[in-house]
Image 1 (cartoon, each protein chain N blue to C red):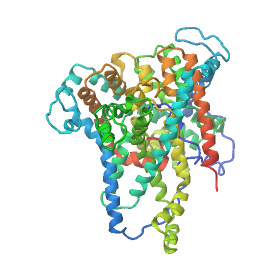
Image 2 (cartoon, rainbow over the protein chains, first blue to last red):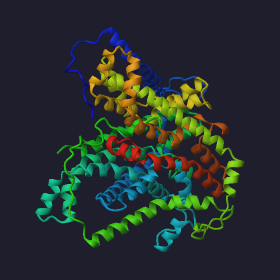
Image 3 (cartoon, each protein chain N blue to C red):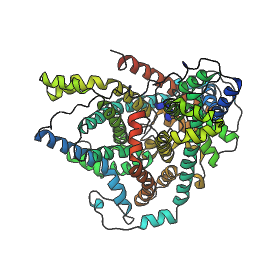
Image 4 (tube, rainbow over the protein chains, first blue to last red):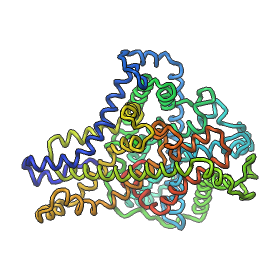
Length: 299
Length: 300
């Protein structure tokens, strides 16, 4: 996807000072913004983790204190666990839903575009709005609790239950995300060469076999891409939790990003909050590496 | 989305969709009747589940204040606009709407301007440090937004930008993903277009304004739609930067109403007010949303 700069082969001469100067002027506004608000803060974010900075106060260097505190903080381990569990349920579910809907809306038929539009609608909807509506959906006596009751499953408010609160939040997340994965997979499906499936068809492969042995392997890179995006999104889930549970009941939906917000902007302990941010970064890197090694390996 | 500043985090340099190999799509014969019935039933079920929350949001917002029961409350009557009168009259919803418009529109203009300028230089010009700069932009996409959010907030706080429009908007203009997409698009345009204008004696700025800008309208539209969407729905950054009642956006404002335990019909009326503009944008510019995702993998 990253192409080499165009025109390099045709014009091997060095740029004149004037040419380079004007080019830099075009880059400069963005470059300044980037240095001040992305590059600088990324470095500072890591550095702050080693200080006891609070708003308006001095930043004193405290070495590994924040990280030692983090390791000893049971809240941190619980937040890490909630984040990982949430992601571990949410990503596969969301991908299965994306894949199912992509398969169902793959061929052209009357109304297919309408279905695709409907499935993408939650993606453009604010998670705060989703949170407000789903708080009612999952409330005591609300649609979800009645439906669960009718099926003989745990009724009552899932949001008030320390075990079921995470699955409830996962369902909201899947609802809001599956349309995105569906579109990515659909785009890839259109590119699968017709010859492959026709060959399988003449060999007498059933619909399931064609899906399993032709379509699915071809979708592998797209599935990998969706997995990475959805993992990032899940690790950073915040809006719905803020609106629906506030991290509760008793921290059972308290995630790392929620902890970062809590420590930084409720207790104004920005040093400690930055340490949580560093932990989140490390977790993201580890999981990205694992995904690359398992799902992303080239054939 | 929580990460307006960091939509980049979602894009890996490897890119979403491998190079297109447009061959004839596979078109088998019409599926059997059973297959079509099963498909239709599953799709209708999916659509029902997807649309139910929207239906509930709208219907329950047009109810008089009172206890909400299921399923009776999902009938369209009794009908009342009481919640809208209250939420628009007594609460600051219109002010929040204005803040959201300012935040979204100014950011779209800023991101498109700076990203197209930088993207043009990266795609078509040569200057020292170009490769290093570009790769450092890409590398930063890997850093989660939340790591940079705290120092960014400190910078804004030190500059007295808390509770100001500029404090909310300016940091979001450093959108590296936008530069990346712009560069990709502009690199695909033939050099001859720019050379001709230059030979005619146009200044570089003139080339940018009268040649580059008209040519990049498609990517401007796609990117513009998404930047608008990210900002309209953004939550965490406005939550920490716009703290006063008057500086809330629709998302943070509605969340604050919810924390005040405002009645459900009012919360949902506020939600409908926040949803209608993005819904209209989706209806009108749907092509840009779906094609943007399909061709660039841009995060929704």
